[in-house]
Image (cartoon, rainbow, N blue to C red; front, side, top):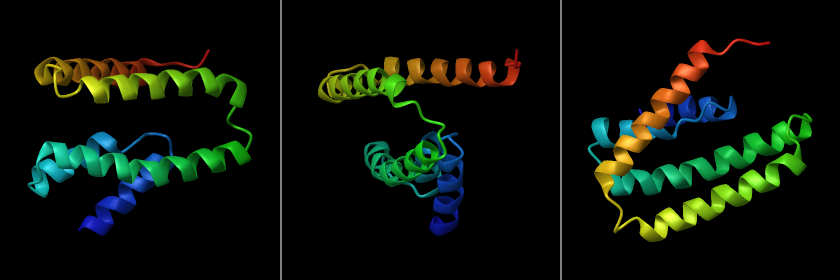
Length: 115
């Protein structure tokens, strides 16, 4: 079962959809894993999937490195800051904020039309 879940989530990651939220749901709900451990495993799962997909997209010419560097720097800085603040951060506020982010992103994807 874990191999099948990993293959499906790897496929979704390769499409750029991301499977992190689904992996955390699987690990916490189906596998009974604590959320902190599931988050750590999700980070480790994401690294090779993202590196492979990013490299292949770059080889296809779909990644503009000049536009990537500022976003990458901001992402790394905010990830480091939240990891450092994580133990003191209000987990309920983070959970609600992430839920709002997922909802807004989902609505944008459903309502998006090419111009």
